[in-house]
Amino acid sequence: MACESWKTQLDTYLDGELPSEEMHAFDAHVRNCASCAADALARVQMKRSIQAAGKCFIPRAEFRRRVQESIAVQPRRAAAGWGWMITAAMLATLLLVGLGVTYTERRRAGQEQQVYSELADLHVATLASASPVDVVSSDRHTVKPWFQGKLPFTFDLPELQSSEFSLMGGRITYLEQTPGAHLIYKLRKHEISVFIFQEGISPSRGDERSAVTRKLSFNTETWSQGGLWYCILGDASAADVHELAELLKRSASS
Image (cartoon, rainbow, N blue to C red; front, side, top):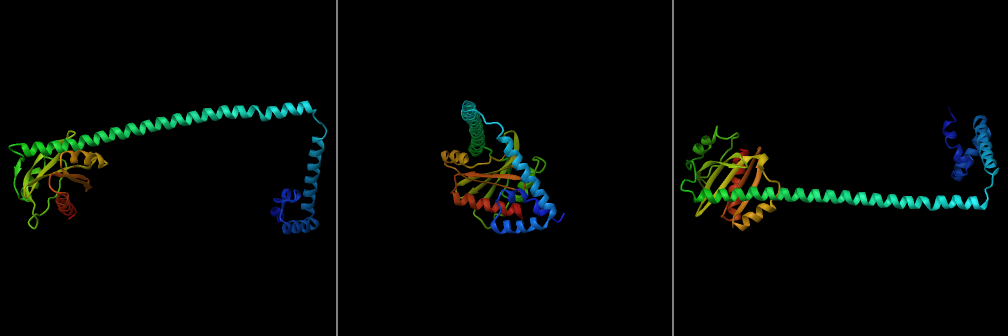
């Protein structure tokens, strides 16, 4: 057992591939260790026997040439053939993946655009209606309880006494057959819609939203909080929309 570490390097030693210092140390060990010396002798004899067996048959030049050609040419052709097949398969796979990603992205973009287009339509239609809200009140303690039992979720509304915003009321609305709350806030001459839905309906990207709302001259801000998705939409300035969003965020986290 004491010689196991030496024997693992025996072949390297016999091939002369050890560093010079290790070679000298191995020489000294073999001279004083009968077990390692016997193993070294046996391996040397085996190497010599293999060399002698290899010289028993010397192939003719023609045979050597045919073997070399078979080794050098045929595998290259095979490798080239396999290479083209592998390359073609990889290109086909990449093409299919690319088409799949493009299709998915376009489909997702179309769905997101549809969501924001519907919200913009709801905003415009509600403001154009003779009765834009179902519960008419500027008191959040009146509006919030009105939604209880009508929606599968609850939400909080901000206190507006120290702000320029005023609550006009709210109504039940639907987006993709999903019920949600539609609140109307007033800021000076602007009327702003606040939509609240459960989080699963929220689109994941904002570029399509921006394209839709810019076309209709609306500013928007969206976020998810407490399992709900909020979308503010209106013709007020971006700063005013953001201020209302901050008020709603603080009320939801309090």
